[in-house]
Image (cartoon, rainbow over all chains, first blue to last red; front, side, top):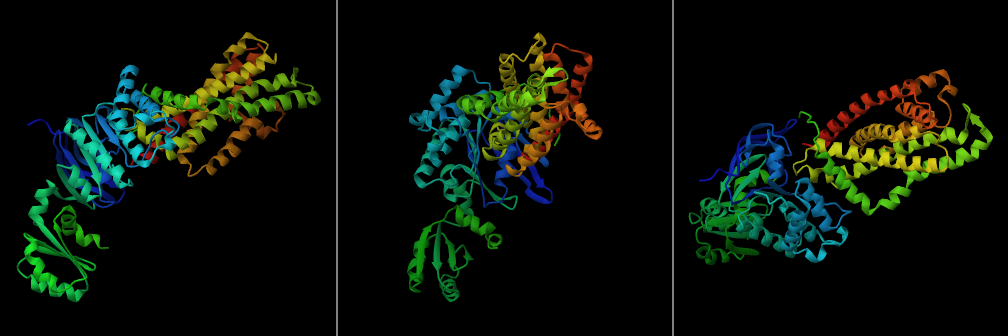
Length: 306
Length: 257
């Protein structure tokens, strides 16, 4: 097996008294898409900022593309592409000029820079907008331009910090599609997201983060199957209804979770339980496949309820 | 986090700023940094000059001209590295974007200082050309003034970047411009000889770097270069280095977490 793209061991980041990232271990394989998943403040962004050698690590080891982040940040950054959470394009320059100016930071010769700028603008579907003033671009277009910008140095690893936060559904799907194409071309990706759906669609493996720690990591489907099961039944109603439902399905579920007015029942075959439960006539009854969101609720749920 | 020294890559930041500047060059050129000193020169030099007569044996407009050249560089560097740098640092997140590339934050800081200093030097040189066209330069030594302009601009670019790194909003720059830059403009021998100030104010003026730049450039434009006026220019170097290192440290503290 080839050398991993990223190896972190006991990686820690403290801001004063706050432990933002708390002795985490993970490994990224070449060619995979790895997602850090969790609520705001979980430590995802700090983790990826350490990976792209901008945030200094406090303790532990972090090796990116075979280089230590604390020793050779410039050499690492030369081989990475970064799509930041907050748009930081040059507002005074057109998309085309943005790319040419950025290519210079990587010492890409002018002719080659023009070739790549044209190629990647085409790739993200912005060729017709190459010369537009930047403020005429929508949020989705700017995000795609950031992706094109991150590709200029033909990175071995693409780091994406919440690549679709704040985008409308169409724009989000466009970004997803581009990222999947890149993955098919073999570009290793690491991203952060708080959208479970995004993680499930894009990531080969995920790390569920909460309060600076990784609670679980693995393939989304494996994690969900192992801890939740195949199906989830959601029942919304009052306390009495929840108790009645639990009594009816006693022994036939794999687990349960309760947040506010909703009871989640985890089971191998939800369909079999539906007839029994519908007899209670709950105001809301839903049977659906289990997903990462259920897993997240289960492993981090209790601390999320504050 | 240890401070790293900037590398030649700082030039990339300078090039970036030039690319943006080229799109908006005209308004910035006619803006306060050249327009204002020019108006002062015309208004005070030719207007007030008729009342003043001569200063140290020079026509007043000739006396004022070197100070106008120097202060135009000071203003240009100060505006660029306060408002301009602050917008890049905080509003546009340009610094953050650039440090995801092989450039370090010190490269970015050095690039912005070089850029501010270039604008100062350029503006000062344009002023110098204008002044020469008015027939106010009398010596080939005048051609050495851009060196002083560069030194002075580097100082004010670094100093202003310190202020930008500390600023919480644009209003903060009013303090700096009113309490630091304007006093330099008024008390460093631009409009009247430093000797005409009270003794304590003369002592203060000796701590203000613009004083030496104005004295030296006045001597050069009159064709009277001497070590007595040129050597004190070296006093600009220590504060320049200190301000640059402080700026780099403050920007790092502000942006790197």
